[in-house]
Image 1 (cartoon, rainbow, N blue to C red):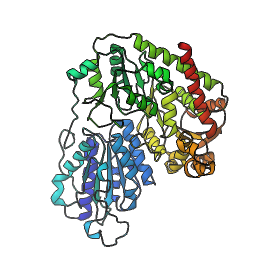
Image 2: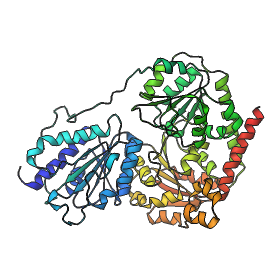
Image 3: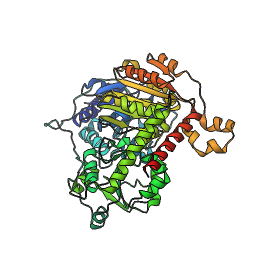
Image 4: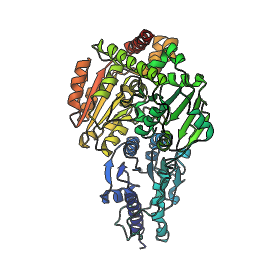
Length: 568
């Protein structure tokens, strides 16, 4: 096989064949000429679903969403030049959130680099330390055919390795870019990929004597964040020890169990309760919740803190962990969920406070006929059908869900909390919806919605069930809770932080052929939501007001504090 075009086409087809053998099932492509050999190979292999996105940044975040939903790397492909640069934010998110991703950037051949050829930038190591592995195999040649399958299989193995994340293949192609593939190199007869690198997960990882001694304490707390492990195992450990689980919705552990504490942020804002419930031991599973209140409470508690992470990642911004245990959280919890003291006074105190806080939150929400952002988060989380997925944006939406959503079953919650950005959120939700059989909803603020407006391109044709709820408070609502709101003159605060906008978001959705409506009271929101979750793509824009939103949050916290005071 000596024709360069046929060699390149065979190389691309080999990559795709190996990825399909490894279980990869989704590829997101942005149009481009230099990437044609791989784009054509992806389109020709029906084991992978192909999704075309005009905007490269949107394409990359869509692939992130797919990988978040499935745990399997998705392919994202762009042409050369600034198209490749547009992937960087999603690569960073995937890296910090440990999301497997196969990032493929087409490039010019070596003879066209550094000579002013159009659409050419330095793509070698473009994403720096954000990738788990970088490879530039060079222009495909017949002499290197024996390495092609290894390259493709290793890319998947590196992306799904001990610390999952993005892999970057920078693929140089020469003209002609369109050709029929020649023969592919031999594959494994079994249908398996060329390499397999299974992750080793110990079934029984016992802590050392010091940690075992810590876990005998009565006053313990489990803090469960994203990737906390199997909820059943977490609550089994909590029940055996008689400890509460402060369960972030992203953990999957916010389920109706006697050990679940959902209102932890509001409870710990009440100083007498926080002081009375100081723990001696804290087990931290998964990522930290968004709540600064919890972080501050743990930092001054003086408790022995055990951080359990599969890769012993240093997820300890307050630097308070006494032990960083390298263990799978599920296996670790199961190993320790042996007979213990069970529920006692300590756990009952938390459970009673949780019940009081939930009643107080419901009382405040019910007395407001208008839409409130805490009430909207509670209503959305409660209304979604069983086995739904809720994608929630960074900034205030993820906090309102964490602070105010009660426990429930059958709801999976996902968010881009690796780098905590507001870019690419809609595209991520689209990726989740495309990759999963579950109905999907998105809770997002107006600025994040505008930031990723290109995520709406072509959405009406994508055959997904996706409900997008946009909180429209005319700007950046989270800044109203931060020091600049109190320290600056109104005009400076509005200009630099609140960044008010007056875009007609319903009309914006309509331009993309989407059904959309605006609601201004809670009853109308509940009606619109009920219609939206029936299927298809719907956008519900809920109007709120930034100034009164702060007051509602304070009202909820005051009501919870009063309820705790009445308990004595």
